[in-house]
Each structure stands twice: as C-alpha cells, then as structure tokens.
Length: 220
Image 1 (cartoon, one colour):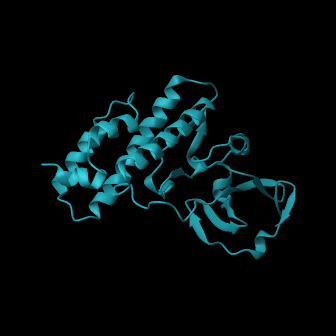
Image 2 (cartoon, helix red, strand yellow; image 1 turned 120 degrees about the vertical axis):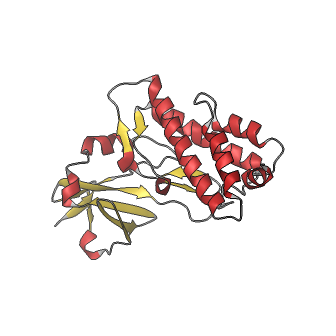
C-alpha cells in the first residue's frame, strides 16, 4: 500500500508499530506519533472531523497534526507525543498553588475547544496524562457538533471532573492511606457544583494543606 502524510510520501511499511490502541496501531514519527486505523475502524472515523480538529491549535488538548492516507484513502493522522519529563509526576503530591495553575490552564483550553464546538466523548484516565501539566491526548474521542451551544462547555467540564476524580483516586489508592478517607475525599470532590471551577473549588477545599495527599490524610 502506498501511504502519504498529506502530500508527502510515507514509508509506513518499513515502520514497526510501537504500541496499539482500540482500533489500530501507533508508530513513532519524527518527534511525535502516527495513529493508523484498522480497516474495520476506518469507516467509523470521519476525515472531515479529523481535518477540522487539525486546524484547532491547543496546547494541552492534543489535536491531530496531519492526515495520513493509504492508497489515497484516509486512514489515520499524526499527533504530537506527550512529553515524558516534567516538574511533577503525581497530582496528589504537586504543591497546591502549582496544581491550581495547571488546572486553570487546562480549563482555559477546555473553554477554547468548547467554543470551537468540540465535545469530549467518554474519555478515560488513559486519555489524560500529568507531568506537571495536564494533557488530554485522544482525538478519536472528540466529537464536533454542528452548532455552538453553552452546554458544550458544561458537558466537557463534567467529563473533566470525572477524569480528575478517577486519576486522583488511582493515585491515592496506591498510597498507604485509609480507604475511608479516600472515599470521603471522592465524595467531597464529586459534590462540586459544575459551575464552579476546579481551581476555585480545590483552593477552598484544600485550604492550608500543602497538597491533595496531605489534605486526605488529615480527613477524619
């Protein structure tokens, strides 16, 4: 099969997949990645949607970079890879002020893509990474609606809250912390009003605690 990335020839047949995803293979490509769909999944992904997403410039919500074609048929796209190095590697031990800044930046990106009619569709914590900054990195789970709506942002923030809850719970469960305290924190976090930002809510919730972990350990 003859592959090209946009108008440039791509020797994909000489490349070895480095990993897989549900519906295809992932290859290293220059300083990023290429995601190629299996034939059974090609029809489930719209070339027009991926093309639209590729024109949205977001720093923390990764979008497709260039489209890939096999025998002139759309079959995948390139995307930047998540940086491996960062200031911090765990949400729960990141200093409070730094974590709040990271959350603020992510929520600003969510506002931006929501205004572009992009809505998250069933993201899981494998689709988000943290290395001192948050990155959401699975365009296959982004949908583009036909018209703008205030509900898009609300939907995306709700999805983000669920993701953060899962990530924090996963990290807390790996620590020597009483399960009851973890459940108490989860309930507090889930009680957040959707119209209150994560930054403001966590700022009030953590109070004078240095980070999430120390706050949870102090819970009764």
